[in-house]
Amino acid sequence: MCFPGVEGQGGFGICIEGNIASGKTTCLEYFSKTSNLEVLTEPVSKWRNIQGHNPLALMYQDPVRWGLTLQTYVQLTMLDRHLSTMSAPVRMMERSIYSAKYIFVENLYRSGKMPEVDFAVLSEWFDWITSNIDIPVDLIVYLQTTPQTCYERLTQRCREEEKVIPLEYLETIHQLYEDWLINQMSFKVPAPVLVIPANHDLQKMLHQYEEHRGKILMGSK
Ligand SMILES: Nc1ncnc2c1ncn2[C@@H]1O[C@H](COP(=O)(O)OP(=O)(O)O)[C@@H](O)[C@H]1O
Ligand SMILES: Cc1cn([C@H]2C[C@H](O)[C@@H](COP(=O)(O)O)O2)c(=O)[nH]c1=O
Image (cartoon, protein in one colour):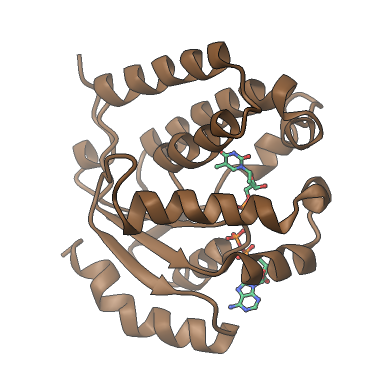
């Protein structure tokens, strides 16, 4: 049994990856003005409100109790994003089901904040999904920042749930991303990776996006 994903729809799928507050949404906003390209932002609003509950806030308050709850919902909503019908030949999506598992679930588990049984359940779900459902990603764009830059941007963005995040948390997430996408020594990387240095100010970032536009969209031609 294998269900078709984006590829089955004949499209080209790009995932924008990076640490919390690295500038992914800003990047997507910029590319959203491109014709024949659809942009799918992360479903954070769903993670902040499922039938009146806020699993994102609960996870930050008590990760041991609520990590599984949040990550189960993240996995479902990411899968839903990957499998949704394409409205343009190129899709640019914020993060992926892969980073949810390889970065955030992995971090909860390794830091001792996710019980082994919760990790086992999530891992079996993830393995089942990725072996039975075609979730093709054609290109990963990694916005590479320092944790310090993200900390400053996160503080400036001031999302209520994230006020408890210390710099060390962003350092750990950063290292997990580097081991996955740069050193390629932790988990299988599902697509070629284009690295864009992303510590620069907004103007320079937009300039870089223009410079990289060809490389990002080329594979879709
Ligand atoms: N290059 C940049 N320089 C300074 N601030 C930025 C830059 N890119 C984004 N920001 C700001 O940083 C915060 C986080 O950016 P955002 O795009 O929401 O990141 P992400 O989607 O990766 O969490 C926002 O307040 C945004 O306006
Ligand atoms: C994918 C994923 C995200 N989160 C958390 C991390 C952040 O607080 C938000 C996402 O915001 P960003 O600015 O787009 O990075 O959600 C999480 O806890 N678990 C996950 O799998």
